[in-house]
Length: 125
Image (tube, rainbow, N blue to C red; front, side, top):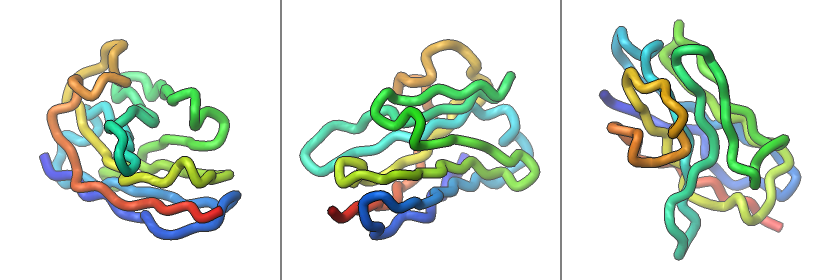
């Protein structure tokens, strides 16, 4: 499973960005997908996830109400729309895939078998 994240960049506080993560192959619709991030000097943390079986979503408290995860199975792509960005959102953002998993632990990095290389988001104050 290959994952390619894109869409990162430099944005001012209050601005928006949309990250994309594409995964070629016929089984994408059966992957639960997650976004995680790692800020400088910090450990990687959960951001958002979307369950393949029912499309349910979950968010970290720090991004709830500002970020939206979605997917387009026809395009084999998952998105992370980020609005009202804050300097503390600055991080490398990673997408991850949990093929066939639809349980309740999708905020746990250990549920994900495949990871993309990450895309840098920098929010200036």
